[in-house]
Image (tube, rainbow, N blue to C red):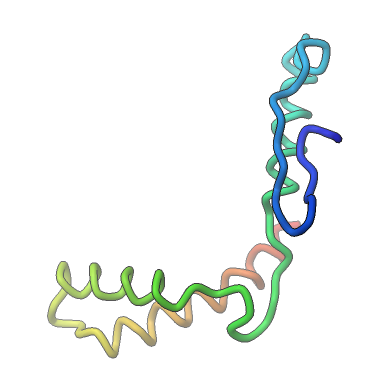
Length: 92
């Protein structure tokens, strides 16, 4: 197993071995490997989304900005979330 492997749909991470982190370059490479394994592939539509988590963000934000209201904030957050995969792809 490398530093980070997807095993049965679960991310399995082990700390890097001392030899793998013997230099700052090797340590950075080990961190990058874990980061790459954690980065989900962009998916379209609602696949991979967490509706309850999104709703919690909207409700929390609405308490801080009540003039915007829950419905408007829902539309705003939906646009932000949908733009995420596209932005991530452009950054690659």
